[in-house]
Length: 471
Image (cartoon, rainbow, N blue to C red; front, side, top):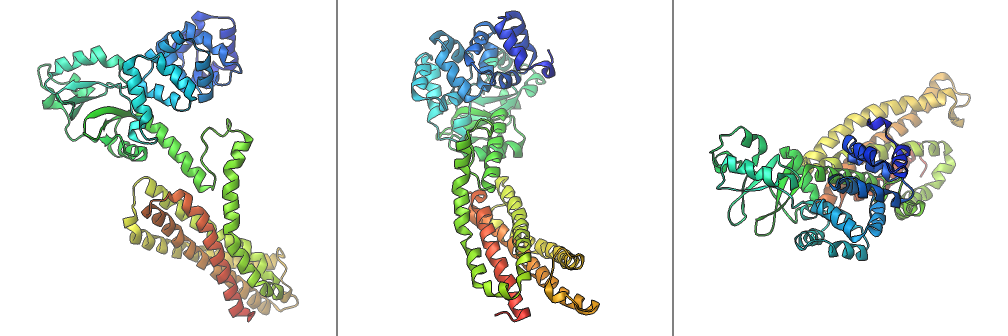
């Protein structure tokens, strides 16, 4: 069956009809993650029990790892001890640890009670590592080869234990004290002479991380060195696990989602948007909106101080949204680029002067173009009647142009100044936040908006006061 033809209705039909042959064929022909995506929408998870009783455990274990956490929890409650033992025996230890993290303590205890001693010790070890570190995402199913082996002995070992490993494309060479001394790729083994020693063909310039290394740093190393697996070492620098590329993809997806949420002033979601309740989503938004409301008091104070100026020349109020939005948007462009570069480790706080100098030059170019456009746009708004300015009524063409140009130039200069300021601040804030150990995505955007709004208004009213003698 092709993926496009597979849907919830077909899966439910096969289960209800107890069509064992068709179900087994389905699990052999369609990616298990695609089946899990459909199975997550079955209203009664007890219907899925038939799958676990009829389909081979080598398929159902991986299928279970792709199910949504709430579906996994309901299934664990329904499984017999025998079902749990079969599931655990066919699962990788990192997958077991992943689904146990979100389980209630009573279910975790039940699962561990039916797990063999060796697996239980490994799972407990993984669960005790600090969240978002290499130790918390690593697996202990990998191929280790002794440095004294020949190529032929190594290939025989891989044939014997490789099926239980998460990857056989990269294998890890250790000495008798379990110190990692090198890595060897499967293709190097295949194309080497059978009697060659591993020490002759293994790579000794491997990249490794410690169990406490942050998962973001692990992801950066995967990208930098184009890896499919990376060794994880303990405090004694002995090999205790590996991180595979599929785990790193999950880390990257998680981090990008968190950064996007933080830059939009929303607390990151623990679950997907569609599965989060209305109240949960509201709670994520409310605190930040209140914080931004309080921070916005600066702009309110400026407007209050210059309310007399607005009363004398009301046309000034028409351009306030343009100035605040224009400056804020320009700053956000810079903030996004700098924050992303920091996340990718392309720049560090040590590059402060280099980044500021670059952004100042960019801001001069951008402000010149946007300022000129703003000057022409304001004239167009006056000329087309989009905006009414009483002082222009009854004037000759040249007098009209001169008077309208004063306001247009005021808006253009203020907007240009706001862009220069906001792009500079937009580069400073993420770098400063990173330097003091704060998350640039959290700090930069809310502070940028507040600072730029206040500065743009102050510049606007001081220029207006100088031109029209409003003070």
